[in-house]
Image (cartoon, rainbow over all chains, first blue to last red; front, side, top):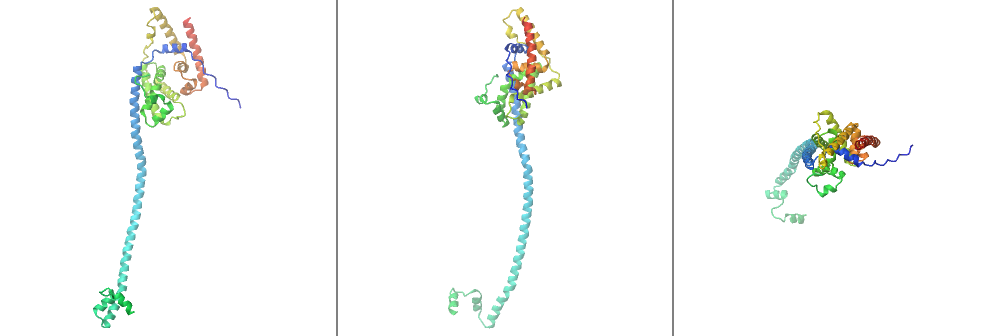
Length: 149
Length: 189
């Protein structure tokens, strides 16, 4: 591999040549003219940056709109699935409850009937039957029952 | 350089910092960049196109293009050569694409106001002959010698601006300078 050549120094600047070139090119545009040009460019710059800001906002919105639409669709589907499941569940619960109540009604009738039937068979009064079923009207029935046993 | 005064902040900030701020949407930072490079850009543009009106249009277009492309500009690099390259390429395309307005005879007569009519005539002749010698140079040599001697760009910056190697810039500069020095010597003798 060859050793890397050092960078040669910059050539000297030739002032006489520079002056001659400047003179042949004519005078530089006046400061006022340059200022007018600067103002033109500044106006263009402001317009471009403003457009860019609007575009950025819009692009941001449209970019996220895609995600938002996808999320909304997913959420709708999820809601439909969960809602459906809940409805189905609720229906099942209602059906089960009705069935259970019917069953309890149909099964609990027999003991009540049997108590009533037996009470009536032994000639118990209606108060005694009620006391046997729901407890006596005064609050001492539990004590009475306990002493009796 | 121009009429209104920029803030201290924009004077202190270097090109790289200004570019970063422009990328964030700061219009005043771009204005500071424009102020900094406007005069030199105008000289290069006028050299390319030959008259002030076309040069102004070119400079404005180049600054607008630069603003447009600044998003992809690598801030580890120097702004000036990148911008001048854009300016020169835009100018070369413009020169090809449209018929340019005739170059107006703008000359630095103010400097000669104190001279006698004979001296003025002599100097005018010298200036015109030197201008002819400058115009006779190959376009790239003319651009290189002017950018180096008048605009004060380094050979590396010119190389980046023109998309050629620094060695080629040095060679063009050397050739152009030899020719122009010989012309000047002949005219002065």
